[in-house]
Amino acid sequence: MAVLWRSFSLYSPFHLSVPPKPIYSYSSPSSCTCSSSSSMEAPPQGYRRNVGICLINSSKKIFSASRLDIPSAWQMPQGGIDDNEDPKVAALRELKEETGVSSAEILAEVPYWLTYDFPPEGREKLKHQWGSDWKGQAQKWFLLKFTGKEEEINLLGDGSEKPEFGEWSWMTPEQIVEHAVDFKKPVYNKVLEVFTPYLH
Image (tube, rainbow, N blue to C red; front, side, top):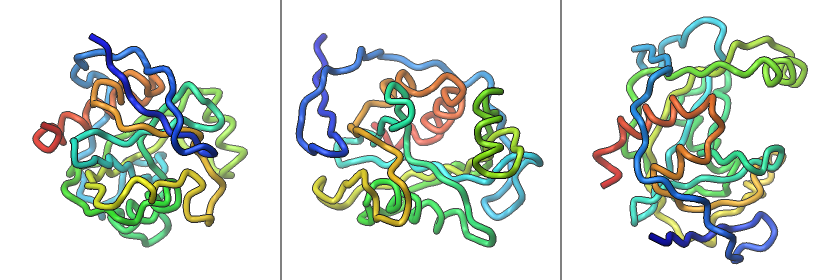
């Protein structure tokens, strides 16, 4: 079965790329830490507070983008929660900062924190970048529906932060997991499991 998908570059918004090898099933999460805290309660100790955004279009496809620093790694938007910031507000802010998208509405959220650990080499790099030695990230995940036009998507973001992504595409849940870095796959599996009713 041939699967053709569009990929959009940071600099040339309408070019076709070779489609990734699709897979048609994804496994249940096996090593994701789930902490049953509400969105305003503290996440597990030693983890940086973070939000994740699962943005879907009218075809129930999910937004994913390739990292500029690791082009083979695709991910859903995510980012840190500021001090005293509500996670829902952080999700909308991060989405706009990273993708330029402001036309979106929140449909659902994962009702607990999900955590992943940084690989040792990544942890050391981020320790110098952030000035704090976090074990990993504790994430609150939100499902958002994109209500705008694709021309709104701009990987330069809203200009407030340095761009993080090089290309973007609408993907199936299976492709989202397939193209994620290994240490994020368990979290992605759990997120997609919780949001399954909205993805069909």
